[in-house]
Length: 276
Picture 1 (cartoon, rainbow, N blue to C red):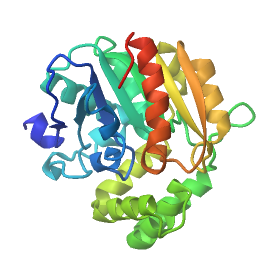
Picture 2: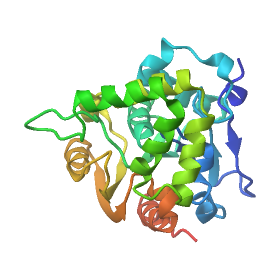
Picture 3: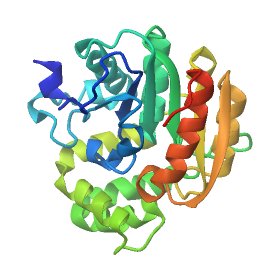
Picture 4: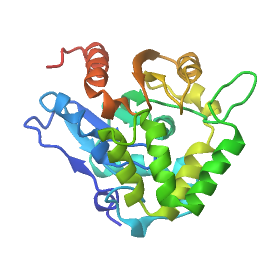
């Protein structure tokens, strides 16, 4: 199957084919439209490429493989195939949200030639608590209850979980967009992605990642406590931690200018240019 069609890959218009590349990867239950408030900030300076994971957004659902997508490595392979199909062989800046941060790390370990740096928005290598040395934010019972709610009342789960993720009221624009995205996703595919997301643990993989990273941590985040950002900074070589004074788990949606400023400053150093 054609990867461009399978993953609904889009390149935003740009006049310079040699401009540096930003590749955006959405989180669980989301789609590429979640980046719409951030991409205008880099329209003049970067080529920007977006895609949907299989089972999300407008991807080709016929390509959904429960075995492949029961592991984050399956999504990492999607990411690598998107890069190859798009002719992205090097110097790509990966911009990932939530579980996509882990997916990007795994992809960069397998293909370090592709990625020059990574921007990690709300990353978590493991959502489960592992006392006494790691606080991921959830106990196993919490996550099993979340999956049970998805099974029993998927729409009710979406309406409950969206405000938890955004850290805002149900009538907030970001919350409504996220809830709509949840509700438009096939429940079977969404449940598998949820299980893969929340029960994965890539902590042992972190030392093998050699790609420099900017970690953008939300100060008040129900899904990724502050401990997680500090843990990643300590275990990802060449990483920089920026704690954003915002609530929720989706600053690229709720505070896109704050995210854009942090990304622009980071890229101006790593690319040796001043972004417009």
